[in-house]
Length: 229
Image (cartoon, rainbow, N blue to C red; front, side, top):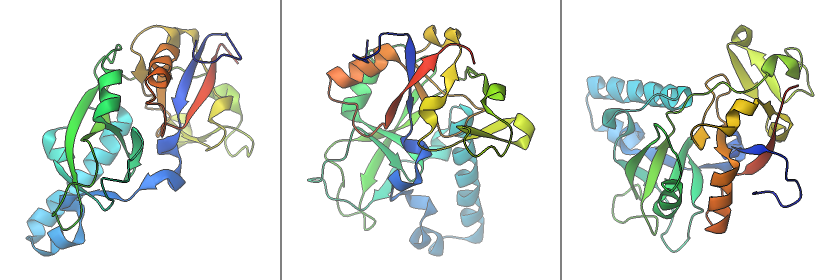
C-alpha cells in the first residue's frame, strides 16, 4: 500500500490545484496582453471564450478540444530550474513527460494528455527541461457523502455547499477529512468529481507507482479514507 502507517483501504487526493499559493505563472499564448493587442476584437473575444470553456470544461471532466487548449504556453522560468512532475500551471493541472510515462502504466479511463510547448513570453527558448501536458481527466465519479460533512457555511467543514449542493467548494488543508464511498476502490485509477471542483482523486496503486518512480512531488497528495460517514 502507499501508506506504510495505515493499511486500511484508501484513495488519495491531489490538493495542488486547490491551493492558490501553488499556482505557477503559466498562460496560453492567446490569453496574453501582447497577443490580444496585435489581434482583432473578434479574435480577442474568441480567446476569452476559450478561457471560459477550458477553465470550466476540465473541472467538469469534459475532454477539451485542441482549440480550447492551444499549443504554445508561456512559462517564464529557465530549463535548468527543474519543475516538479506536477504543477498547477495557471490553475490547470500540468504533468511532465516523465510523470505521463508513469501514469500511462495504470487504468486512466478517458484521460487525455494535451501536449504543450512551454516557452518564455518572448518565444525565444523552451522554459522546461522536458515537455509538459495538460492533464485532462475525463473520468467523472461522484464518490463522496458530502451531505454529511456539515451545514452550508460551517467553518470546520472540509466542504462548503454552494449552488444549493450542486457543487461543493473544498477547503484547503481540510481535504484529508473527506471520506469516499467504497466504490472508489474499483474503476479508473484517476478521476474527478464534478461536484467538488479543483480536486483530483487517485487510487492507492497509482500513488504507489508515482512514489516508487519519484514522480509524486508537486501533487500535494493527502490520504483519503474509504467508508461512510
